[in-house]
Length: 150
Figure 1 (cartoon, rainbow, N blue to C red):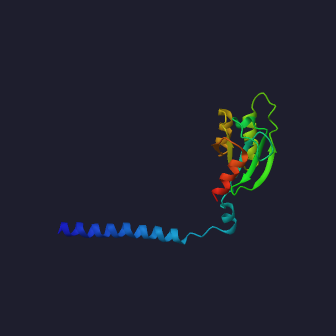
Figure 2 (figure 1 turned 30 degrees about the vertical axis):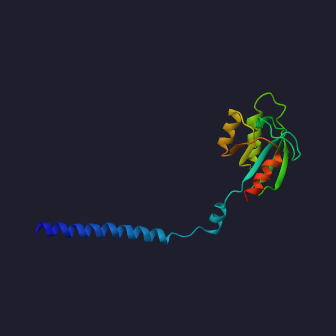
Figure 3 (figure 1 turned 180 degrees about the vertical axis):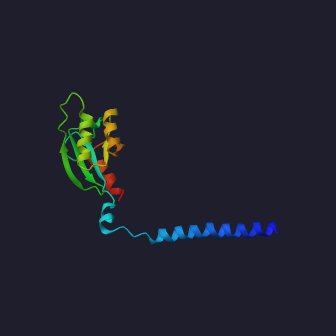
């Protein structure tokens, strides 16, 4: 008899577990869809690329150090020019990298393209969730890469 009782108890236990999982899944299915305001805040963030440059022309070379750029060419992901920003921190003895990185972050830049960045500039990029891409050559070469990727 006790074997029969154990078998019945096991069946009820399994039914209870399965029942609670079903209820949980049903409750999850009843959860309301995000409203229009919530959906708007979850929209994907557009990517902006800042290309460090030694001039404001598209033929300008990408400098070895991103902080030493005289200009930052800002492009969207499709390779369309958004703006060309002069580097107002170029004359500073210290802190030009972090200051330039913060300026770009405040403009909505998500990717910095340069030869390399120093550790302090990198720290500001990381804090602002910006990516760094190392490239040599000129601005036009990076723009061509952006256009090819689309």
